[in-house]
Length: 251
Image (tube, rainbow, N blue to C red; front, side, top):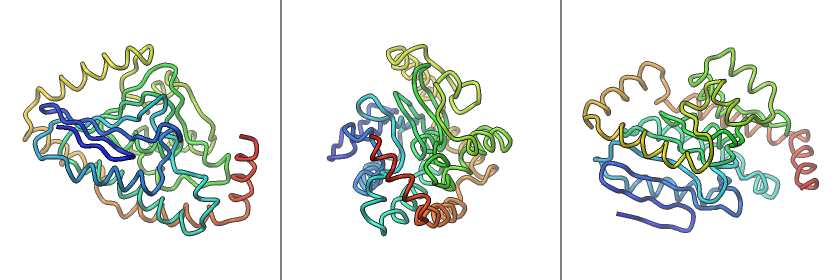
């Protein structure tokens, strides 16, 4: 079964479903229409898939929040940030194992989206990271996800340093769980991992994931929602708007 919208597709083949962000011209940056499309696609997810693969169309996984819309509409940041918070919390609470197939750049909120998944797969040449502080932005929505993924100390270093890293570096840090040598090899790796995950008992997988989510507290969206409010307040400052405007002028 396959469902399509302008910004997202959901393909279901047996126990494996694939949710694809479909905004390749904007590197799958998370706009309000894209977030709405992803939630709508997840509404159509049946109860039976063991595995949900999240990936991006084109050469990028996800460039994070659509920063152009932030500059153009002062009401956009809270809506976008809360939309991202709801999406990441929803993925944590799905009974299926959620696999991020990071086919290309995963930046800021896009890297946070990957960290919200249960398993992260990528390749050596992918670019990942959290450059928010470089842009005068606070990564408050993604910070809890990264802390749970790699630990408080390493997460502090990554988020305060900013910038980007290669897939190989992200694997060393712990953001990526399994690393392929190339984009082409990632397809084979993803097939191997998802088939292995799909061979488990659906009830056992769902119960185990539910327990793990309860243990680490990541199913509670309260902290993500507070992070969205904090990030929105920082985005409203002159520093953030000046840095973002300068970035778009350079590009």
